[in-house]
Length: 443
Image 1 (cartoon, rainbow, N blue to C red):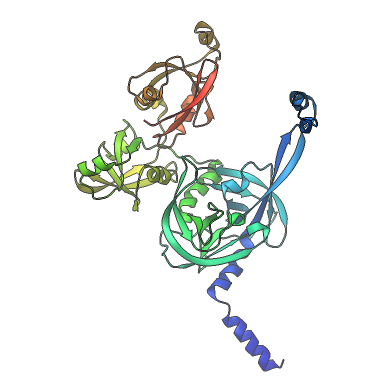
Image 2: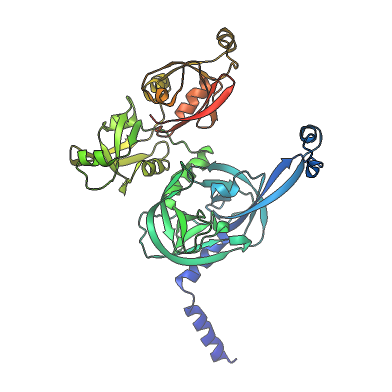
């Protein structure tokens, strides 16, 4: 090959360096492979195969447990030079040890900075002793259906695999389980497999616009990503506080059924009906009223109650939310700031929203009332036709958990109430005698 041919070959190769190629070259060093080690402990009865289970308890109590390990593959993106990595919560959930492999094959053990199951986002960190390549978060409020995107990840352990496609749809709501709805997903036709989870979704300029999430693992030609504008609020909370402080609005909503649609003269189901606004709440101070119909949140149309709940989960303490509401046939806007439930309002909140009056349990109280435990909050009164009354809670019942958080005393109870996010659905573990049962309150 002569000099002229070499130069022509170089020109041809340069011409093939499309924006996609340049984006991959720019971003790939910041994409990491994540694998985790999970340890399961179980004591095994060697006589089980012979049909004899009488020794199960013996082997459980007296023989050392066996260990088995399982590796779960996923991806992540370094978001600053200090080694903070953004990924999915489900990638690192239940991991005993998290390993991170960089594009140059260096491997590190990562620590969890914070994780949030509601948004399926997590921040982990590695200490490399040097500045690391990273990608700054872009924006997702200007995305266009049909624009080209690419995903980089580690599907099935194949490191740094690039797939391309277009944005197929925006603002997708994805139901994951009975009570979990993820809102505002970006739908793409780029292949997103389990190993891609936590990896970056990029536009053609290399801007980070989303975090890939493998929800439908058997789907072909369908992928979903969490918009980066949604993730940014969560990331800030996780880095700063190690958790997401979601706060409280003080508003409860319900679905619009056919009768309500006729009453409000709506031609199709859209929005949710405000059925209660708490005194001294941020929603009350902003002017929301019972009977308002919330049509949109920050210009995103609200379809139903699940959609409302999912969207509200992305807002954190201090956020400012713009509601578009319909009142008396007129459209108007109200801006509400997310705050915490005031400590002095907990008793009033419990009575007004739950329909309960509760008292801290104690050893003297338990002895005097013949209770089997001295922990929790004892139900002293149930207001007829309240949320608690309708679900069957009785005086003498003891609240032991609220939204899966232990309630051993009044301090725990107050904190659990303060940590609630838009409490139109509360999961309680209630003890009655020696039995415990879960109930869901919908005030």
